[in-house]
Image (cartoon, rainbow, N blue to C red; front, side, top):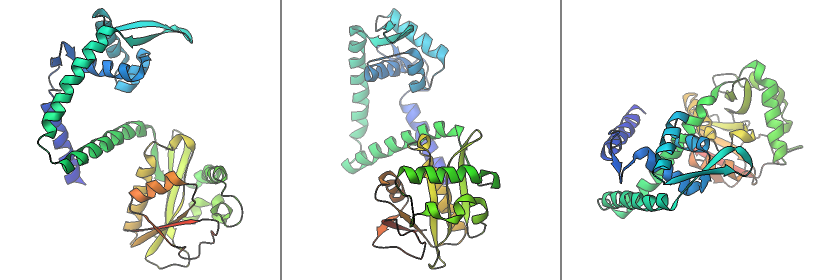
Length: 304
């Protein structure tokens, strides 16, 4: 991991230098880098309050106010009342702002085209996919600082049981043949003793919002573990924390000496299956072991 981190940081430094982002005086067509970004976001949004622009640009309120004042003075953005809230001002581009933005886009496009000329077609596609995924991961990491993943404690049992029951009910996985009926649901802490098991929770403040873990596959090969009861409340979905938690679970499985990880899921849980596939799980024809979960209709296995 350290070599990977060093390589990413080195590439990021080189990109920042080549784009002149270290020079606060660097500008195009009289616009600073921050002003270019603000104009671009307004083009995407159509109109927005200064607070919304600050959130999207990850800038302090005072910095956004200074940028807005300069662009208003230049006649490139204007402020109007919010029809839904007379106390708010909504910012939008003027015709002069749209003309400036066309010049900015043209200059930026030229820089990208020049760089792409030094890449083979396959490399270009890899760069696009990689940059998009890395930018998304950076957003996830920033948002995820409010959350913590840690091993389950005895006091977490009631919250975890509620998550399991609420999410499984949401997906219609209720009744005999589903893990919602497992006796362990009300005693998850006691049901996952080390070293062959592990169970984690995701918390924000004093609220537990997600969970997941692993244990030996019942009735299966000793080298195969089972991914168990990985469920999130709605506010965690789409935050990238599923990727982070699943990575921790699989690392715990490797540390425990397992060779493969097996899971059972449902046809209706498409988002979850896509997450599993990204971590190396592939669908298999039928169930392994003797979990007792006859209600599941999708089965997956990953080499560790």
